[in-house]
Length: 420
Image (tube, rainbow, N blue to C red):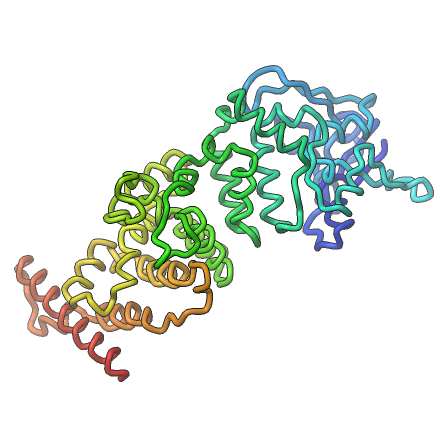
């Protein structure tokens, strides 16, 4: 029984990045021996075990063979005769196909790098380990996500780009399951450089297969007066990049970046004879954003919130022109009294949309403060304030609260404009 550190922990160690957890592979052992030595088996599909003292996961070395389509279309072989090199060969990228060990023999511990992954790390190249890469379409999303993590200095080997392009032409990427796409997308959006996730797929000529709504933005030309970056795809990527410059909790980070991604989906269906104008793209984009989220099994709370920010994001560019009644109707349509996050999201999508233009990274966004100022005043209006003596008539209650909120919005807007 020999144990090796493999995969991400070895890669991150060589890159001098923080190692969050270790991956261990055991060679020359069996399930029976692992259990006898105090390990606890976890999961039913693969022989993965928890260490009796450190609680980390140890997996038996394995071989894999493609037997059918889809994520589960593999047969797996385990046994004491499987070598560490065979285990490394089934991995996706050369930078993930490096092992260090065996740890039981410190005097014999060495780096095992049969696919020159260490060289690719030094040269910042993402390269597939073997042709087995093409057997699992999720690996295409993973390589794009790694680039979103590591940055634009990293390139994809030409043979890997060609392979991914070939996978797209052969229909392999059509096997991707929606849940797997969302898992990789949600992780990519939280990486430091999320636009590189989409740029990579575009460079490999598969963006149109996996995310057609995003790809459609490439041909949605913009007015150079408002968008010198040229098209809606580049604008969306700039907005997404702006969203990464603000740090919230992970949940809101994901929500804001998802909203940034879908906010201009409506521009992707603008008729060519109407370009570069995109009248009504905010309204048109709602259904596209909803279909996109439903197809990828995006959680309903995220879907519903980004639909609302998509619908009203253009209002953030004309706040001073909106009358108080329009503000109240907007808050009501967004169900903001039940979900105040909708207002926070609209405010922040307004900021990143404003600054997500070529040369506009540092424009003033002070005028956007009007939205939270009005909302803060409006949300404080309570039933008891409007009906101190009580009221039971539902229509009167609705009308009274509506008028009181309009009045509060009017006061707040005037105070904001007058600098009070």
